[in-house]
Image (cartoon, rainbow, N blue to C red; front, side):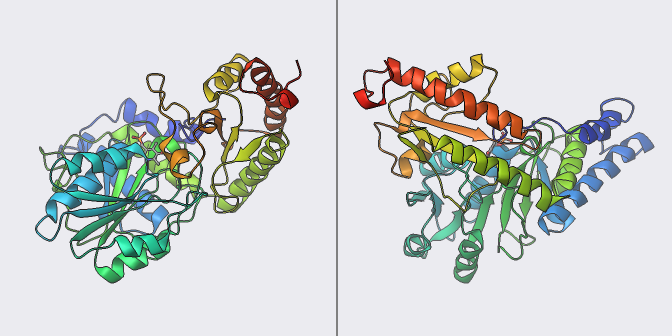
Length: 385
Ligand SMILES: *Cc1c(COP(=O)(O)O)cnc(C)c1O
């Protein structure tokens, strides 16, 4: 139940990768046949990625994952366009790969506006329009949020950016395989994606860069990736990414329809627990995302109870065990601080079944009650002892 954190490698993806982990180990830059085999495999994957987002193969550059793609898009555009201006607009609910890259740029003399969101996590186009200045060089707004699943009006953001001649980057890491993407229709200049979020391998992603976009390099070295991204290519990773994105485009409607049914079954069941609220947008939402907050409990404790019962999930209360900061996403949505620590994210994958959903719906209310009975914060009427 944590497919937004990562997904299992698909069997067909492993099969496709295996030869490039064994006999086909050539370096794509080598001119002899073994190298050319790798080169051809990388170029095939480039076509597969381009095909999935309606781009041209020459506009796809492989990276070490979503984090590198986000960093490259933001820092690369910032430095290449700093003569024109040093102002960047993003949203307050971006992934840390975007937010922390922006924070770092602030230390380098750039100015960043962080757009607020409404209670559902939606960025207001009005606020965006007002934030645009003469020296704005980049807008970065994610396609779908990784915590609450809210899908942003990216096409409208793109139209606004294009009208004003500002570059537009979108982090589409969570959207691939769930939201149809057409970079031309969406007026996107840069788009990040990551293999392990849709059945591909970890440590491999891509950045789409629209032809003609002024962007500097993040990594310097060899002439790989058309001189844009140095470093010997992760050939098996790239091959796996290409196959995974191709599969993610197949049976699109049926797969997402099935996820949607499971999602809504979960949401409906969870909201029957008293003092439980849905986070994120009820409709403009990824078909695999469930995020709720239970009053009077700690998300961390709930995760431990679920873990003991073989259910793996995630909470926004602490991004990792060393931080007790509440989720910046839920906080930006205005979830009150007294209850923000009681959040739970369940993110579905195609391997999840109705039986599993029902098992969660059987165990979760008991776990929540167990914690509420232990908590000094729980009012009398919500206790069983
Ligand atoms: C996972 C994720 C990333 C980071 O991708 P990695 O490949 O894990 O570095 C970036 N943005 C979003 C929205 C994500 O969900």
